[in-house]
Image (cartoon, rainbow, N blue to C red; front, side, top):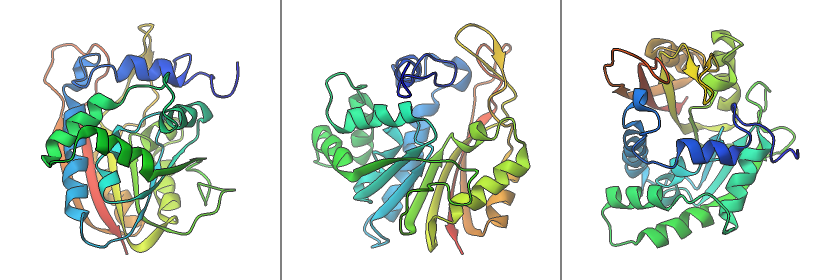
Amino acid sequence: MSSEEEEYEYFKSAREYLDYFFSDLTGAKCPDEGEWMPWSMAQFHRTFSQLEGTGFGRRLLDIGSGPTVYQLVSASRVFPEIICSDFHKGALAEIKKWMDGNTHAFDWSPFVKHVTGLEATSTSWECRQDQLRSAIKDTVLCDVFKPNPLHPAVFEPFNAIMTAYCLESACYDKGRHAYAQAIRNISSLLKPGGHLILQTYIGVTYWVDKEGIKTQDSLCLDTDFVLTSLSEAGFTDLETSEYKTPQREKCHYSDIKGMLHVTGRKI
């Protein structure tokens, strides 16, 4: 098995992961989470709409992209130079396949159409998809536990960094101190005054994999700890939005309590 086909989060490949979790925009595969995907994209839309036209800068780094690009649709209107990064070569290969217009790439058009609808402009979803493809300039390996997470690649500090549902997975068996250190490490890649956009799971103690086995592959976080970690890493002007998962008598896939969206500025 090649490095691009190695297992990805209990799936045989990153593509199998995409087919399982992202075939339905509403999140029907994961009823414990509710319709979190539309909420997630709405938060990104709101955040990047606020940055649009501010002359803030051109360059954005996505930490822990995984094999996905849905999180970057709104960002591509504001940042014409986006770098995707991840620890997993196979995940980045899926993004590269989509960037190249490979006919076998995962189809992200439903997600692009959804965001285009939120934007409510005269721009077609096809043009927005082309804009996203054009904005993603490169994919690089990333290790958030390194002082320079992109080493050995070298980049000038970025105008903005975003990370969605990454750090809690990377730190699941390393504890909260490792999460706080990872925040400090990625902060080193951001210009002073630069913006951080973060989304994370809240209150997860287990997931159930596709074989029905409980696994703990996500660090259990709460809002106060995340905000404290960001403040101690030198971020200010923190603003939050929270999504609460549906009340349920029985958890089928996860005991997740919610999702958190945070924006902040590096001092």
